[in-house]
Amino acid sequence: MNSLQILIPLLAERKEDQMTLFKFAYQKIAEGYEKKLEPLILSVDLYQRLYERAKIYDPYREIKERSIEAAETALPLIEESVESYEGYEKLRAALAASIAGNLIDFNTAYHTPDLDSLVEVYKSILEIGFALDDSNHLWRRLKSQKGHIVFLADNAGETLFDIPLLRLFRDLEWRTTFVVKEEAMINDATWSDVAGSEIESLCKIVDTGGWAHGVPRRWVSQGFLDLVASCDLVISKGQANVESFPEIQREIGVETYYVIRAKCPHIASSLGAIIGDNVVLRRPYVE
Image (cartoon, rainbow, N blue to C red; front, side):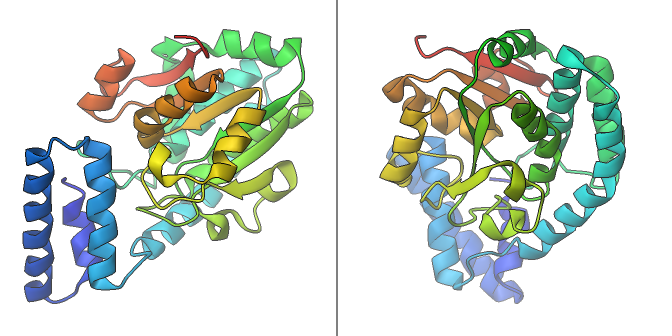
């Protein structure tokens, strides 16, 4: 819960009010552990209660705006690089761009985003590659048929770094639905964060119908579940989706590629990775 050190000052300016919120938060965390709640469920419930107590529902708005500005500044150089490749290598470059965007994360312990080094991060990922690498399998799938991709977006600003990948899907004649959050839990991308971007011309944009980290089954809409059930392939961005989407994936049965930078021990371990690994991991519909 190191993220509380960022969140609570955004919810309250006065030290006394901050201390009240910290006390409330730690009490709820203790109760959650006693009840053996899943960490994701505990976190979502806690954040919802904190926002409601403070009567502030998008406290990361300024952080999101700075993230979008930083991504807009870095994107042209990254796009130029991606466009210099062809075929499978272009897919890898687009995936590297998408993972570079995943560093724009303000809710992970052990990780502090540097918005001034996004181009350098992209170049590093391109050079190092993916520790877990199913990109070749993804390339063969994209080339062998046409269909419908559901793209589970992650954070504001990060979504701009998904554009090279979305362009490639379009060029390969796949239809993409880009899924944002109905309401932001942290710096999650919502409709307003992608409005006016190229994403609008590349994809149909919908929301999860939920207010949560990731897409926990209990907090998404039936419309979202129906959308996933109707698609051919899912691209899932971010750590919260690694925690939450597998339940839906198993229920519906859909091939999914998890595209992230592993940034905390729990998520890294669940993937068979270590902190700092770049991941393009395929999980077929039958595990």
